[in-house]
Every structure is written in structure tokens, then in C-alpha cells.
Length: 130
Image (cartoon, rainbow, N blue to C red; front, top):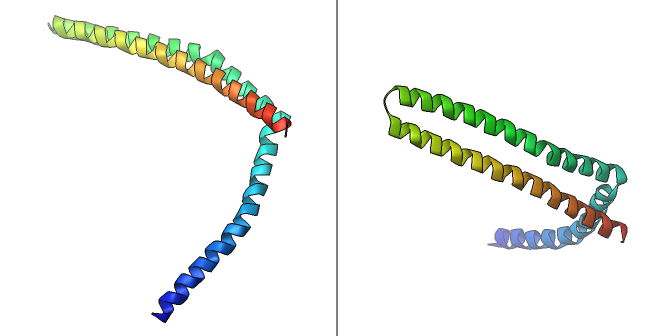
């Protein structure tokens, strides 16, 4: 029983002392992270990455759509040649849905890049105002 009591006391004491020391370490880490985030070189890299995503998202999306269309045609032709015209129609419908999904994903990537740019700008503005 005495061992359990000493263990619990030690645990509590360690928690209290660790919490006091931990807050200072947290504040130092937070300050360093803010300094890194607001560094002009870091912000330049973030903006370059955002622009890259905005520029390349449509290109990648079009390549995926083209590959999906090619695959859809190949599958449709094979299924149709096997005498399953109803299944071939379903393949074409699925290919159309895939193309729509790629369009939505491309738009989401562009929108996400724009949102990230705005968030980075807001963070940089609030960081430089501190």
C-alpha cells in the first residue's frame, strides 16, 4: 500500500513539475514555429507550391481523363465484341462518371490551393503584426 501511495505521489509531483516546465518549452517552440512560418523564404516557397498546384491541377486532371477515356473505350470494345452490349453501355456510363469525378477533383485542387494561399497570407499578416 505504501508503495502505491509513493508511486501516486511521485506521479502527481512529476505531472505538476512537468506541466510548469512544459509550458515554457511550448512557448519557445510556438515562437520558433511562428518565426519560421513568417520567414520570407518560407513564405516564398509556400506561394511557389500553391502556384504550382494551381497550374498543374488542370494538366494532371486532363491526363487522367484522357487515360480513363482510353481505358473506357478499350473495355467497351472488348465487352461489346463479346456480345454484351448492355454491359458495354454500363462501362460507358461508368467512364462518364469517372470523368465527372476528375473534373470535380481538379476544381477542388485549384480551390484548395487558393484557400491555402489565403490562409498563408493571413498567417503571414498576423505573424508580422505581433
